[in-house]
Picture 1 (cartoon, rainbow, N blue to C red):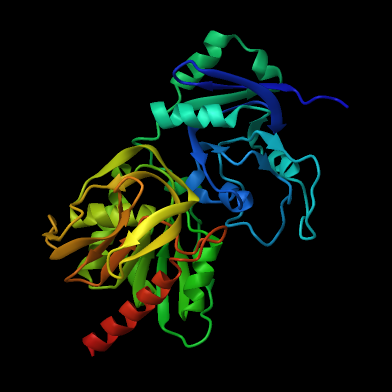
Picture 2: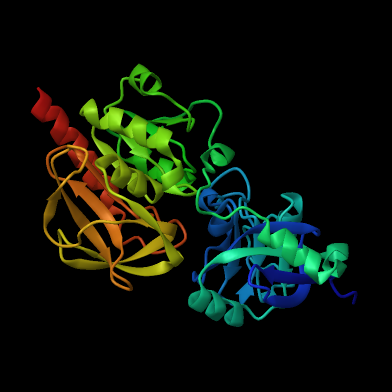
Length: 380
Protein backbone atom coordinates (compact mmCIF):
# COMPACT_ATOMS: atom_id res chain seq x y z
CA UNK A 1 0.00 0.00 0.00
CA UNK A 2 1.32 3.43 -0.98
CA UNK A 3 1.48 5.81 1.95
CA UNK A 4 -0.03 9.31 1.52
CA UNK A 5 2.35 12.17 0.79
CA UNK A 6 3.85 14.03 3.76
CA UNK A 7 2.22 17.14 5.19
CA UNK A 8 2.85 19.56 8.04
CA UNK A 9 0.68 22.00 10.00
CA UNK A 10 2.54 25.18 10.96
CA UNK A 11 1.07 27.64 13.49
CA UNK A 12 2.01 31.30 13.64
CA UNK A 13 3.82 30.80 16.97
CA UNK A 14 6.22 28.41 15.22
CA UNK A 15 4.63 25.19 16.50
CA UNK A 16 4.79 22.39 13.92
CA UNK A 17 2.82 19.14 13.61
CA UNK A 18 3.89 16.64 10.93
CA UNK A 19 1.31 14.35 9.35
CA UNK A 20 0.07 12.98 6.03
CA UNK A 21 -1.65 14.67 3.11
CA UNK A 22 -5.44 14.39 3.07
CA UNK A 23 -7.65 15.78 0.31
CA UNK A 24 -6.05 18.16 -2.16
CA UNK A 25 -2.30 18.77 -1.96
CA UNK A 26 -0.54 22.12 -1.81
CA UNK A 27 -0.63 25.01 0.65
CA UNK A 28 -3.57 26.59 2.45
CA UNK A 29 -3.72 29.34 5.06
CA UNK A 30 -6.35 30.38 7.60
CA UNK A 31 -7.30 30.70 11.24
CA UNK A 32 -6.94 27.32 12.94
CA UNK A 33 -10.03 26.48 15.04
CA UNK A 34 -11.46 23.31 16.52
CA UNK A 35 -14.97 21.85 16.34
CA UNK A 36 -16.15 19.49 19.08
CA UNK A 37 -19.00 17.79 17.20
CA UNK A 38 -18.94 14.00 17.34
CA UNK A 39 -21.03 13.83 14.17
CA UNK A 40 -22.07 16.01 11.27
CA UNK A 41 -18.74 16.61 9.57
CA UNK A 42 -20.50 17.12 6.22
CA UNK A 43 -22.62 19.92 7.67
CA UNK A 44 -19.52 21.46 9.25
CA UNK A 45 -17.55 21.41 6.02
CA UNK A 46 -20.38 22.98 3.99
CA UNK A 47 -21.24 25.67 6.58
CA UNK A 48 -20.25 29.01 4.97
CA UNK A 49 -19.43 30.38 8.44
CA UNK A 50 -16.17 28.40 8.28
CA UNK A 51 -14.82 30.34 5.30
CA UNK A 52 -11.26 31.47 6.01
CA UNK A 53 -10.77 28.89 8.76
CA UNK A 54 -8.76 25.67 8.96
CA UNK A 55 -11.04 23.36 10.92
CA UNK A 56 -9.74 20.71 13.29
CA UNK A 57 -12.12 17.91 14.25
CA UNK A 58 -11.67 16.87 17.88
CA UNK A 59 -13.48 13.58 17.20
CA UNK A 60 -10.67 11.21 16.15
CA UNK A 61 -12.39 9.13 13.47
CA UNK A 62 -13.77 11.12 10.51
CA UNK A 63 -15.19 10.11 7.14
CA UNK A 64 -16.77 6.74 7.86
CA UNK A 65 -20.17 7.71 6.39
CA UNK A 66 -18.68 9.43 3.34
CA UNK A 67 -20.47 12.34 1.67
CA UNK A 68 -24.00 12.38 0.24
CA UNK A 69 -26.19 14.68 -1.85
CA UNK A 70 -28.82 15.29 0.85
CA UNK A 71 -26.95 16.81 3.81
CA UNK A 72 -24.87 19.71 2.40
CA UNK A 73 -25.68 23.06 4.00
CA UNK A 74 -24.62 25.00 0.90
CA UNK A 75 -23.28 24.60 -2.61
CA UNK A 76 -19.71 23.61 -1.70
CA UNK A 77 -17.15 22.95 1.03
CA UNK A 78 -16.08 26.28 2.54
CA UNK A 79 -13.36 25.48 5.09
CA UNK A 80 -9.93 26.84 4.21
CA UNK A 81 -8.32 23.57 5.32
CA UNK A 82 -9.12 20.40 7.25
CA UNK A 83 -7.33 18.61 10.10
CA UNK A 84 -8.27 15.08 11.18
CA UNK A 85 -6.56 12.36 13.15
CA UNK A 86 -7.81 9.09 11.61
CA UNK A 87 -9.62 9.38 8.27
CA UNK A 88 -11.77 6.36 7.48
CA UNK A 89 -10.40 4.13 4.74
CA UNK A 90 -13.85 2.67 4.10
CA UNK A 91 -17.13 4.47 3.35
CA UNK A 92 -20.05 2.66 4.96
CA UNK A 93 -23.42 4.34 4.50
CA UNK A 94 -26.19 3.59 2.02
CA UNK A 95 -26.66 7.30 1.20
CA UNK A 96 -22.98 7.97 0.42
CA UNK A 97 -22.19 9.09 -3.11
CA UNK A 98 -18.44 9.68 -2.62
CA UNK A 99 -15.75 9.54 0.02
CA UNK A 100 -14.81 12.53 2.13
CA UNK A 101 -11.30 12.43 0.67
CA UNK A 102 -12.69 12.64 -2.88
CA UNK A 103 -14.96 15.54 -1.93
CA UNK A 104 -12.02 17.46 -0.47
CA UNK A 105 -10.02 16.89 -3.64
CA UNK A 106 -12.97 17.94 -5.82
CA UNK A 107 -13.36 21.28 -4.01
CA UNK A 108 -9.61 21.86 -3.73
CA UNK A 109 -9.48 21.66 0.08
CA UNK A 110 -5.98 20.98 1.43
CA UNK A 111 -6.02 18.81 4.54
CA UNK A 112 -3.77 16.88 6.86
CA UNK A 113 -4.30 13.58 8.72
CA UNK A 114 -2.37 11.30 11.06
CA UNK A 115 -1.85 14.21 13.39
CA UNK A 116 -2.26 14.59 17.17
CA UNK A 117 -5.50 16.59 17.17
CA UNK A 118 -5.80 16.42 20.95
CA UNK A 119 -2.42 18.14 21.38
CA UNK A 120 -3.37 20.89 18.91
CA UNK A 121 -6.73 21.42 20.61
CA UNK A 122 -5.07 21.79 24.01
CA UNK A 123 -2.55 24.23 22.55
CA UNK A 124 -5.28 26.39 21.00
CA UNK A 125 -7.31 26.25 24.21
CA UNK A 126 -4.28 27.65 26.01
CA UNK A 127 -2.82 30.05 23.45
CA UNK A 128 -5.99 30.96 21.54
CA UNK A 129 -6.96 30.53 17.90
CA UNK A 130 -4.19 31.60 15.59
CA UNK A 131 -3.18 31.69 11.96
CA UNK A 132 -1.83 28.50 10.50
CA UNK A 133 -0.90 26.80 7.28
CA UNK A 134 -1.07 23.27 5.94
CA UNK A 135 1.78 22.41 3.58
CA UNK A 136 1.33 19.05 1.88
CA UNK A 137 2.89 17.08 -0.94
CA UNK A 138 5.88 18.88 -2.42
CA UNK A 139 5.11 21.98 -0.31
CA UNK A 140 5.80 19.99 2.88
CA UNK A 141 9.49 20.05 1.95
CA UNK A 142 9.68 23.85 1.74
CA UNK A 143 12.15 25.59 4.04
CA UNK A 144 10.81 25.76 7.59
CA UNK A 145 11.55 29.45 7.90
CA UNK A 146 9.76 30.16 4.63
CA UNK A 147 6.69 28.20 5.76
CA UNK A 148 6.51 30.18 9.00
CA UNK A 149 6.98 33.46 7.16
CA UNK A 150 4.06 32.65 4.83
CA UNK A 151 1.82 31.84 7.80
CA UNK A 152 2.75 34.98 9.72
CA UNK A 153 2.04 37.16 6.68
CA UNK A 154 -1.48 35.74 6.25
CA UNK A 155 -4.36 38.08 7.22
CA UNK A 156 -5.79 37.74 10.72
CA UNK A 157 -9.51 37.00 11.11
CA UNK A 158 -10.03 40.25 13.01
CA UNK A 159 -10.92 42.99 10.53
CA UNK A 160 -11.97 40.65 7.72
CA UNK A 161 -15.33 40.99 5.95
CA UNK A 162 -15.89 37.64 4.21
CA UNK A 163 -19.61 37.84 3.41
CA UNK A 164 -19.05 38.59 -0.28
CA UNK A 165 -17.18 35.29 -0.66
CA UNK A 166 -20.12 33.15 0.47
CA UNK A 167 -23.26 35.09 -0.45
CA UNK A 168 -25.51 34.47 -3.45
CA UNK A 169 -25.16 36.79 -6.46
CA UNK A 170 -28.87 36.93 -7.33
CA UNK A 171 -32.09 36.58 -5.36
CA UNK A 172 -33.20 32.99 -4.69
CA UNK A 173 -36.78 32.23 -3.59
CA UNK A 174 -38.09 29.24 -1.63
CA UNK A 175 -41.88 28.82 -1.56
CA UNK A 176 -43.71 28.86 1.76
CA UNK A 177 -45.06 25.59 3.15
CA UNK A 178 -48.52 25.46 4.73
CA UNK A 179 -50.35 28.60 5.79
CA UNK A 180 -48.54 31.54 4.21
CA UNK A 181 -47.33 34.32 6.50
CA UNK A 182 -45.72 36.52 3.85
CA UNK A 183 -42.45 37.39 2.14
CA UNK A 184 -39.32 37.16 4.26
CA UNK A 185 -36.13 39.00 3.29
CA UNK A 186 -33.09 36.89 4.24
CA UNK A 187 -29.78 38.70 3.94
CA UNK A 188 -27.35 35.98 2.90
CA UNK A 189 -24.19 36.41 4.95
CA UNK A 190 -23.54 32.66 4.71
CA UNK A 191 -27.00 31.17 5.15
CA UNK A 192 -27.46 27.40 5.48
CA UNK A 193 -30.02 25.31 3.62
CA UNK A 194 -31.53 23.99 6.84
CA UNK A 195 -32.24 27.56 7.97
CA UNK A 196 -34.09 28.35 4.75
CA UNK A 197 -36.11 25.14 5.03
CA UNK A 198 -37.08 25.88 8.63
CA UNK A 199 -38.26 29.38 7.73
CA UNK A 200 -40.25 28.12 4.73
CA UNK A 201 -41.85 25.48 6.97
CA UNK A 202 -43.20 28.33 9.15
CA UNK A 203 -45.10 29.84 6.23
CA UNK A 204 -42.53 32.35 5.01
CA UNK A 205 -41.83 32.75 1.31
CA UNK A 206 -38.09 33.03 1.72
CA UNK A 207 -36.28 35.55 -0.51
CA UNK A 208 -32.52 35.04 -0.09
CA UNK A 209 -30.85 38.35 -0.98
CA UNK A 210 -27.20 39.06 -1.83
CA UNK A 211 -25.16 40.51 1.03
CA UNK A 212 -24.76 43.85 -0.79
CA UNK A 213 -28.53 44.44 -1.03
CA UNK A 214 -29.90 47.87 -0.13
CA UNK A 215 -32.93 48.90 1.90
CA UNK A 216 -34.71 49.59 -1.40
CA UNK A 217 -34.01 45.99 -2.49
CA UNK A 218 -35.58 44.77 0.75
CA UNK A 219 -38.60 47.07 0.47
CA UNK A 220 -39.13 45.96 -3.14
CA UNK A 221 -40.24 42.47 -2.07
CA UNK A 222 -42.77 43.91 0.42
CA UNK A 223 -41.49 41.79 3.32
CA UNK A 224 -43.32 41.05 6.53
CA UNK A 225 -39.94 40.66 8.26
CA UNK A 226 -36.17 40.53 7.78
CA UNK A 227 -33.71 37.81 8.77
CA UNK A 228 -29.91 38.04 9.01
CA UNK A 229 -28.08 34.72 8.66
CA UNK A 230 -24.93 33.24 10.07
CA UNK A 231 -21.68 33.96 8.26
CA UNK A 232 -17.90 34.30 8.50
CA UNK A 233 -15.71 37.24 9.42
CA UNK A 234 -15.47 40.03 11.96
CA UNK A 235 -18.74 41.88 12.75
CA UNK A 236 -16.71 45.04 13.34
CA UNK A 237 -15.82 44.99 9.62
CA UNK A 238 -19.45 44.91 8.44
CA UNK A 239 -20.50 48.55 8.71
CA UNK A 240 -22.71 48.40 5.59
CA UNK A 241 -24.71 45.47 7.00
CA UNK A 242 -25.15 47.34 10.28
CA UNK A 243 -26.34 50.48 8.48
CA UNK A 244 -28.80 48.39 6.47
CA UNK A 245 -30.12 46.77 9.64
CA UNK A 246 -30.67 50.16 11.24
CA UNK A 247 -32.81 51.09 8.23
CA UNK A 248 -34.78 47.87 8.76
CA UNK A 249 -35.32 48.65 12.44
CA UNK A 250 -36.29 52.26 11.60
CA UNK A 251 -38.93 50.89 9.20
CA UNK A 252 -40.42 48.90 12.06
CA UNK A 253 -39.97 45.53 10.36
CA UNK A 254 -39.70 42.50 12.65
CA UNK A 255 -36.16 41.13 12.74
CA UNK A 256 -34.54 37.83 13.65
CA UNK A 257 -30.80 37.18 13.43
CA UNK A 258 -28.69 34.13 14.15
CA UNK A 259 -24.96 33.85 14.80
CA UNK A 260 -23.38 36.65 12.70
CA UNK A 261 -26.85 38.21 12.60
CA UNK A 262 -26.83 38.37 16.41
CA UNK A 263 -23.55 40.25 16.41
CA UNK A 264 -24.83 42.68 13.77
CA UNK A 265 -28.03 43.32 15.74
CA UNK A 266 -25.82 44.09 18.72
CA UNK A 267 -23.86 46.60 16.68
CA UNK A 268 -27.06 48.13 15.22
CA UNK A 269 -28.38 48.63 18.75
CA UNK A 270 -25.10 50.38 19.62
CA UNK A 271 -23.22 47.57 21.39
CA UNK A 272 -19.64 46.48 20.84
CA UNK A 273 -18.23 43.11 19.79
CA UNK A 274 -14.99 41.34 20.63
CA UNK A 275 -13.00 38.29 19.58
CA UNK A 276 -13.19 35.18 21.76
CA UNK A 277 -9.94 33.43 22.68
CA UNK A 278 -10.79 30.21 20.83
CA UNK A 279 -14.50 30.56 20.03
CA UNK A 280 -17.43 28.17 20.31
CA UNK A 281 -17.64 25.51 17.61
CA UNK A 282 -19.57 22.29 18.00
CA UNK A 283 -23.01 20.86 18.72
CA UNK A 284 -22.83 20.45 22.49
CA UNK A 285 -22.86 23.99 23.93
CA UNK A 286 -25.15 24.60 26.98
CA UNK A 287 -27.16 27.83 26.83
CA UNK A 288 -29.66 29.27 29.31
CA UNK A 289 -32.86 30.72 27.85
CA UNK A 290 -33.66 33.38 30.45
CA UNK A 291 -37.28 33.59 29.29
CA UNK A 292 -38.10 29.97 30.08
CA UNK A 293 -35.32 29.16 32.55
CA UNK A 294 -34.47 26.07 30.49
CA UNK A 295 -30.97 24.97 29.55
CA UNK A 296 -30.61 24.03 25.89
CA UNK A 297 -27.85 22.07 24.19
CA UNK A 298 -27.06 24.08 21.09
CA UNK A 299 -24.95 24.16 17.93
CA UNK A 300 -22.35 26.94 17.71
CA UNK A 301 -19.85 28.30 15.23
CA UNK A 302 -18.57 31.71 16.25
CA UNK A 303 -15.31 33.38 17.14
CA UNK A 304 -16.76 36.78 18.08
CA UNK A 305 -19.36 37.85 20.66
CA UNK A 306 -21.45 40.84 21.76
CA UNK A 307 -20.58 42.96 24.80
CA UNK A 308 -23.67 43.62 26.94
CA UNK A 309 -24.80 43.49 30.60
CA UNK A 310 -26.00 39.96 31.41
CA UNK A 311 -28.61 40.98 34.00
CA UNK A 312 -31.55 43.35 33.72
CA UNK A 313 -32.44 45.60 30.82
CA UNK A 314 -30.50 48.54 29.48
CA UNK A 315 -31.01 51.39 27.04
CA UNK A 316 -29.92 50.89 23.45
CA UNK A 317 -27.07 53.37 22.85
CA UNK A 318 -28.51 53.98 19.36
CA UNK A 319 -31.98 54.90 20.59
CA UNK A 320 -34.00 51.72 20.04
CA UNK A 321 -35.41 51.56 23.56
CA UNK A 322 -34.82 48.91 26.17
CA UNK A 323 -32.78 45.78 25.40
CA UNK A 324 -31.95 42.67 27.40
CA UNK A 325 -29.67 39.68 27.05
CA UNK A 326 -32.06 36.77 26.44
CA UNK A 327 -29.61 33.83 26.37
CA UNK A 328 -26.32 33.17 28.18
CA UNK A 329 -23.63 30.58 27.41
CA UNK A 330 -23.10 28.51 30.55
CA UNK A 331 -19.51 27.52 29.80
CA UNK A 332 -18.14 31.06 29.91
CA UNK A 333 -21.05 33.51 30.41
CA UNK A 334 -20.90 34.78 26.84
CA UNK A 335 -23.91 36.68 25.45
CA UNK A 336 -25.85 34.15 23.36
CA UNK A 337 -28.97 36.16 22.55
CA UNK A 338 -30.48 39.65 22.52
CA UNK A 339 -34.08 40.85 22.70
CA UNK A 340 -35.27 44.38 22.06
CA UNK A 341 -38.19 45.21 24.37
CA UNK A 342 -39.59 48.24 22.52
CA UNK A 343 -39.18 47.11 18.90
CA UNK A 344 -39.87 43.70 17.28
CA UNK A 345 -36.30 42.40 17.09
CA UNK A 346 -34.37 39.53 18.65
CA UNK A 347 -31.40 37.30 17.87
CA UNK A 348 -29.38 34.33 19.10
CA UNK A 349 -25.69 33.59 18.75
CA UNK A 350 -26.12 29.91 17.90
CA UNK A 351 -27.78 27.86 15.14
CA UNK A 352 -31.36 26.85 16.03
CA UNK A 353 -31.77 24.71 12.89
CA UNK A 354 -28.96 22.41 14.17
CA UNK A 355 -29.07 20.09 11.17
CA UNK A 356 -26.16 18.07 12.51
CA UNK A 357 -26.96 18.34 16.17
CA UNK A 358 -29.57 18.85 18.90
CA UNK A 359 -32.96 20.42 18.15
CA UNK A 360 -33.46 22.05 21.55
CA UNK A 361 -33.57 25.56 20.06
CA UNK A 362 -35.77 24.89 17.02
CA UNK A 363 -38.65 26.65 18.78
CA UNK A 364 -37.00 29.98 17.97
CA UNK A 365 -38.37 29.80 14.43
CA UNK A 366 -41.86 29.49 15.92
CA UNK A 367 -41.11 32.43 18.22
CA UNK A 368 -40.14 34.48 15.16
CA UNK A 369 -43.33 33.52 13.30
CA UNK A 370 -45.43 34.48 16.33
CA UNK A 371 -43.61 37.83 16.57
CA UNK A 372 -44.31 38.62 12.91
CA UNK A 373 -48.02 37.74 13.20
CA UNK A 374 -48.39 39.72 16.42
CA UNK A 375 -46.67 42.76 14.88
CA UNK A 376 -48.99 42.65 11.88
CA UNK A 377 -52.05 42.49 14.16
CA UNK A 378 -50.82 45.46 16.20
CA UNK A 379 -50.32 47.46 13.01
CA UNK A 380 -53.96 46.99 11.93
